[in-house]
Length: 218
Image 1 (cartoon, rainbow, N blue to C red):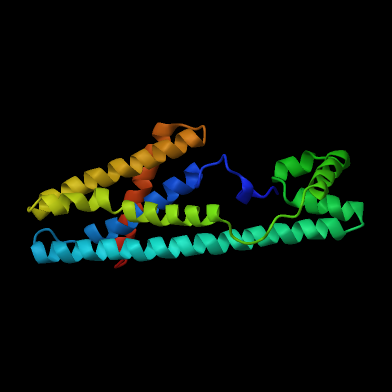
Image 2 (cartoon, one colour):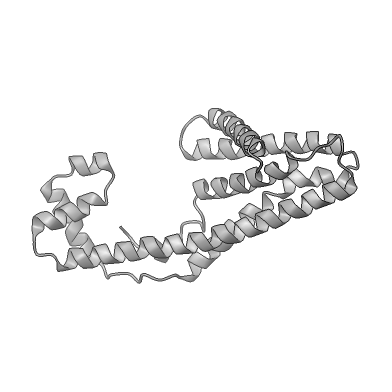
């Protein structure tokens, strides 16, 4: 229940969030390239697709950034309210229940009254943090926006430099799968699991999601 907003050592966004936002933006733009009919597409169609893909990711990047700030405020105010409730309660059992409720399930199950009381005293000794936003939060929201928008470029670049739509689409798909794999690989390393397994799974999941979205008219 520490106030993460005061941390200066951690990165603006954790690895999971960075990968998730980039993959989200990538999948969004793939729904545009996947719906392009290369047999009939001319330069005007490709241009329309590119504008639509960039506009979509700009809009979703902005939406994601705003919702990140909203979620940050809500979670931080919840913690502030919890700390105030902890400071006001005189019932030790109730205080221990509040502390245990913030711990992972297995850790809470193994924590006895002495451990919970020690954590309670540590929390009470610390000042109650502010519940609003700090500059770090705006930097993180900007990072969310940038990641979603940047994910557009690996997929659309072939359409910018290649005049043949079919070849551009094939190269775009290769780059998309490679990017999905890299994101999964990074996530696997962060999770201390098999990077190759995560990479292959992410590529397969991404391809399946795009196929479903296109089939549903997305």
